Amino acid sequence: MIVLGIETSCDETAAAVVEAGPKILSSVVASQDDVHGRFGGVVPELASRRHLEAVLPVVRRALDGAGLGLDAIEGVAVTHGPGLVGSLLVGCSVAKAIAWARRLPLVGVNHLEGHIYAAFLEGPAPSFPFLALVVSGGHTALYLARAPREYQCIGQTRDDAAGEAFDKVAKLLGLGYPGGPVIERIARAGDARAIVFPSAQMSDGAPDFSFSGLKTAVALHVRRHGPLEPARVADVAASFQDRVVKMLVRKTVKAAQALSIGRVVLTGGVAANAALRAALAAECAARGWELFVPPRALCTDNAAMIAAAGHDRLCAGERAPLTLNAVPDLALA
Ligand code: KG4
Ligand code: ZN
Image (tube, rainbow, N blue to C red; front, side, top):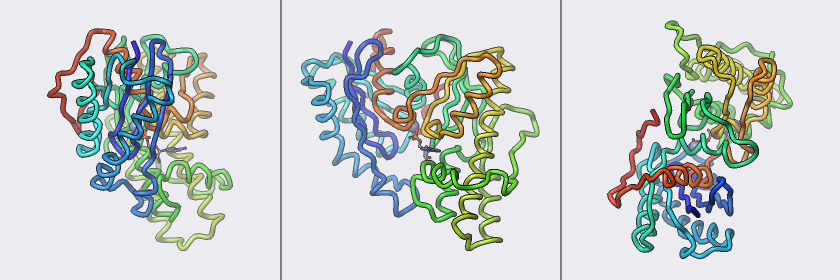
């Protein structure tokens, strides 16, 4: 089946064509960093307006990139949640219009399931069951994927998502948006042991995450010692990143041990972070576990992952009605 995927849940307008495998025939991502950068975060109303302008040219480019016309498309998959409602509505409307006009089967995809399916797009695919750490700008959660399309949430953040913490800390340090890539770059010149930031412990021992205390600690540090010279900014960036990485890795390893699962998937925008990829790889290698991490460009938001998840659901016979709607708080499990 050749599936057109559409993703507009946050601030990337994306479309992709994927065939069985899943194999990517084309993948186009139009970033909105130029729209939101000066605000230090995504402005929902501006995001939906930009999606509206960008979505049809992006779909056209995806079809052209695959060398296919709409007549070759056999199914349409679209992110219908979680995300910003206005943004989701743009993708859902376009997907429904194409499906209706072409009499094509339609399926709604959970954005977080899409991130997990990014691990199936290149290189060896993970077999089931596996533990997935989905770590993005809006979510930070551990899912047990028992079988295709069957998930159990093992733990999640109780406040900020890890990516959100990167973005907020970058804003505090005056580094711009999105924060993850710039903190990663600046941190390379810093000393990760320069500042000991606190690490959240769940008093009830739950495999949940928390990043707001760390963010506050960085804010207090900046207030107390600012304005910081560039070398100190690098130290803060490196010390903060090190803390986030250690929290994510520790909880993931603990959860995998508790579940007796030696197969881990790392995905979502923050999974593009080289320090996180290396730290989790080292822990998994030391235990003889298998680790699956998509290439960086497939960790951040894209539509190939949505098309891949949609392909699986369409092949399993799932169909969405034309009443398919945006669900901003859609849960995966
Ligand atoms: O998955 P994603 O593209 O969008 C959401 O679903 O939220 O994730 C975006 C998040 C942003 O918070 C961004 O700062 C973060 O991922 N991010 C990174 C890196 N690249 C993107 N965080 C740390 N290191 C990176 N290299
Ligand atoms: Zn995402």
